[in-house]
Amino acid sequence: MHSHSSMHAFKLPKESNQESKAARLRGDRSLRQQKGATHTMASQIERVAAELRRRILKGELLAGQRVLEVEWAQELAVSRTPLRLALAELEKQGLVERLGSRGYHVRVITMDDVAEAIDLRGVLEGVAARLVAEGGPSNDDLETLSACVEEGRLLLEAADANDGVLDSAAWASMNARFHATLVGAANNKTLRSTLDHVNKSPLADAGALGIHGSQPVLELSYLKRAQSDHEDVLLAIREREGARAENLMREHARRSRDNKRRLTQSSDTLLVHEASVPLVFRKAAR
Image (cartoon, rainbow, N blue to C red; front, side, top):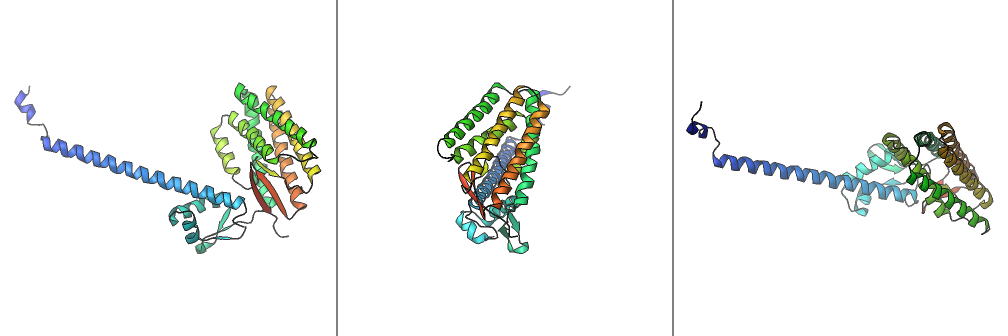
């Protein structure tokens, strides 16, 4: 058994304890600084990517236009590193293309590109509809879906009473909310993240409407059919018919794809309301 005095021999000197504590504090401070710098960089990349995407979709950056690093770093008040990383993210979304060592340019989006993305969205949303129908929606989700269907009905009635003129921004917002609620109600993180990536493709998102006003009667007929689709999907979910809900959503997406293709064939440009944001989609040269 050790004596009381011998135990004191193994204690670190007071100065050593203080130095160790100071070192730990310095290490913690350095780690916090590194985390802060990483967070700041990630925020910059996200902000720059969002702003460039917005300008591309609004037509401020045209198809084929080069994105000059020096110019856009100054325009967006960032260094070239977050700009390059943001452009790499936009390349993954199909909005820009790399020109080797010469940087990036805005990609020309064709109707075939749009169709592929919409088809994939239909498959994913079909799975979501089946999961919701089979699992049963929450009261809140069911209430939101029902409210969207009712809002769509009222918007179409107002259009009929106004010589076919539709509040397209309100419709786009309602449509996006209906689809987002359906996907959220599926409660599947992998499905949602995959769909989020698909929806970053131009014109693929449910909030993007192919409306340019040149054929108002035809355009309104497309939206009336979309309204009917929403009503049928909601009914299938209420009645727990998973396979029917899935097939309806896939058909719904296919009709959206075909309608947009028909509208682009009748015009050199397609004005799209994505929520309240206009987008000019230019057809590829034949």
